[in-house]
Structures are given as structure tokens and as C-alpha cells.
Image (cartoon, rainbow, N blue to C red; front, side):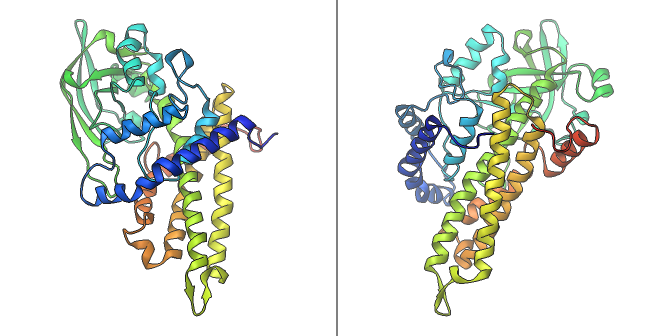
Length: 391
């Protein structure tokens, strides 16, 4: 097993790192000020400007197929890129990308939704979670009833990332109640629904800067040609969307934790108590050491999950492990770093408390800690994965 980056991968990593250091980190004070005063972290115009600069660096559509104008670097490189970008809390995303499940659309859907999303002309979101059904998909309530050549959607979705800004939503609804009750997975369908078809979004205020949405569908009529994928097989699309999002959480946790650990190291060398830098005290040395070990462990879990996906293999078990360990590692590291900084860490003059609030969310969305443990243990107990198996 070769555990080193290739020359090309190292070059991409260094280029992204320079972009983050030159273009993003200098914006952190401005972002903190905007958020404290209730303004958007970054104005849309500023985001477009940054995306153009990234494109000039050669980064556009990192995982988008070349036929759509992307770089198609693969999942492994995406993980490396995300680790670098996550070393800042500036909410930057590279342009030229679209949700992975949009590629399952037919040619007309690709023309109408996929390509405009890649080009930055439209924004999308994915909606599966409901007020009474988070990870319990068997308890979904939202329905879609066929009426002529249209489907009529009724129900609510909650905690939807990007739901307030999206031009269209890929939403999961029950299309066969009996089939859904039997399996909890079949009998649901994914629909592409434009905002102007009638659904409404409501902002949900949270402890962090993340502003999800509640979506309301009240007799929203959707044409039959807006079914994404197969009727009654939408759950599989949902799994694919969520599976991708899970190991991405681990990658973000690694990037954040590396930046925070470096902040703790630098601060501990400068801060003196009783005549000595606190870096010389064991109480500070041990959390630094523990954090370094845990970051490295999380990094390889994430890279393994991404590498496995690049090989065309099922990485869901690995993705769950990467999310579970990575999210918890990130929470432990940010807590330690805040403690090392003492009162200054608790203030809003430093970004630590902001990261503290953001990291706490990672253990909840895209499958809670408890769900990841259930998935991992079920795979082992049912023999889907063997202990010590090379994956």
C-alpha cells in the first residue's frame, strides 16, 4: 500500500493552499464582522469574484466530468482540496459543480438543471429530512399523488441546506404508501421541483452561522418529466447523495483541526504563565499530542473512503466511519484549542468559538453519531463487512 501523494497531487495541494492563504484567510476578519452584524458572511458578488480567481488557478468543477467543462480530479483529490479549503471558515465553494445525483437526469433534465447549475446560473438543494423523520426514513410523510400527467406534492421538509437560496429542489416523496410501509426504502420517488412551482422556504435560526430551511409543499404540481431517476426508486438516489456528504464532513473536520492545532501550538509558545511559556507544561503538551494523533487517524479514514469510491467500489461503510470519527475528532480538537487559549478562546476576537459552534453540527447532519454507529455495527454483525477485512 502506497501512502504518499503523487507529485501531481502534491502540486494541487500546494496550489490550493496558496489560494486559501492568499485569497481566503485575509477575509476572515471581514467575515466575522459581517456575521456579528447580521449580514451575509460573503456577498454573492464576492463569492463569484473568488470563484473566478480559483478558476484562473485552474480549479473549476473539481469533480465535474470533462465533458461538462470540469477538471474531474476524482474523489481522492476532492478530499485533499476540501481539507485545505476547510483551514478557513470563510464559506467558499468552488464553481462549476453540481449535486452528484443530478447526473442521473435524462438529457432534457441535464439541459434544464444540471448544466445551468454547473455554470452557476441556478442553485439547487436536496430535501429528504422531515420534522418527524430525520434518519428514520420509514416515517416519511410527504406524498406525491399522480393526477393526469402531473404529480401533486404535499408535506414538509426541514433542516435543508441551501433551501433558502435554491432555485430548485430535488425532493423525496412517497409515491406508493403500501410499498413504502413494507420496506421503508421502496415506494419513494425523487422529483426536481422549481421554486416557481409553488414550494416555500422558511429560515431556521441555529446556534451556528449555518442557516438551513424548512420547506413547505402545499398542493405543488410537478410535471411528470420532472421525475429524477426511476419512480419508487428515489431512496437509492438519497443514499448516494448522503453517502457522498458523509465522508466530506470528515474532510472538513481534518482541515479545520489542522488549522486550530497550529493556532494552539503558536499561542502556547507565546503565552507565558508563572515565568514560562505554557508550551513547556504537560497539561498543554498532552492535548496537543492527542490532537495531532487523532487528526492523522481521521485523515486516513477520509482518504480511504475517497480512494475506495475512486475505484468504483461501495464506500458506504468507510464513509460512515470517516464521518463518525472525523466529526467527533473535530469536536474534541476545537474544545482543546479553546481551552488552551483560555478566555481569549471564548471571545469573538478569535474564530475559535465560531468553529466550536460549527463543529457541533457535524455530529448531527447527514446522519447522526448514533446512526453511523448503527450502520457500522449492523454491517459487522450481519457479516457485510468482516473484522480486519481489507477495504
